[in-house]
Image (cartoon, rainbow, N blue to C red; front, side, top):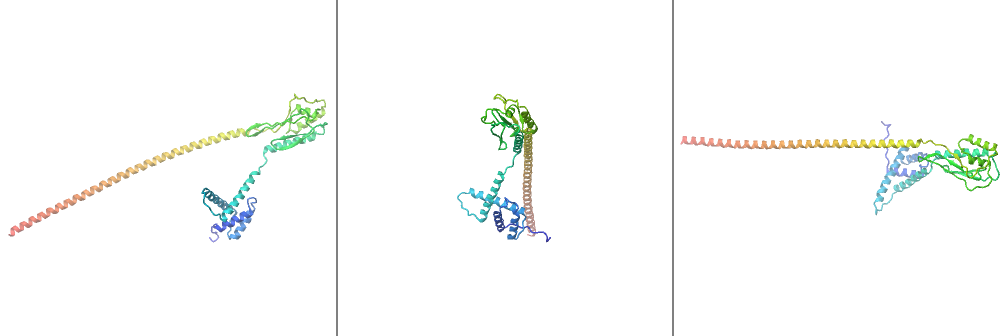
Length: 341
């Protein structure tokens, strides 16, 4: 039994030591500093606390301080002198808020951005591989901008007059298909290259490097291809095709949630009705008990009156008997006197 330790409690001095150590080390950014705080608290107070208890006690102190702060804030016109404990709690609360705000800003890259970046990287590799065989003179440089990645990639040695490249990216964002089209600016030169003619009349898939390489080879091997006119259809660079299961899943989840909500509401109403029925039964029982108590009181009162009447009758009879005895004695005395006289 000696091995069992007694429960250690925090005092006001222990609270101040803990708050000072937390404010000086700021363990919210580096959780490893809790070990240092634990050692310092144990050395200053002489009590050994676990890190978990220190965290929970700190949260409790901040919570109590916030409640008191709200109460004092509502009471206008009252001046309250802030103690050292209050100032430490306010400073630690500011540190916690700053840590939460900085944590929210660090967002991870979504899956749509990574897919768009991969597609653009593949497209640039294809352009670099096919650039040596499809080069022409006086070709300007333009840039393709994809909204999902916020990244600008220069596309050189390809674009010319009447050339349009459209990105079709079927991404299921907010459960709707969105298409993105990016058109080039003013034409740079009048002479149309073979590569621009092919791009203006065909569609290129970004995610399939073999097909794009074959198209470049066909352009290089067929010099008779003429440049496209303004009436030709613009080329489309297809993005990754996404499945549309998410919309159906969300609809099913919504229906399931509504069904569960209706069931819960019906169960709650049934329980309320059962409780009301039980209340009525309890009230009926109480009324029955009250009636029985009333009957018992009436019976007791009747019995008491009967006993009182019987007592009165007995007393009256006793008095009558006494009077009769006294009369008899008087008669006997008179007879004896008459005989003697």
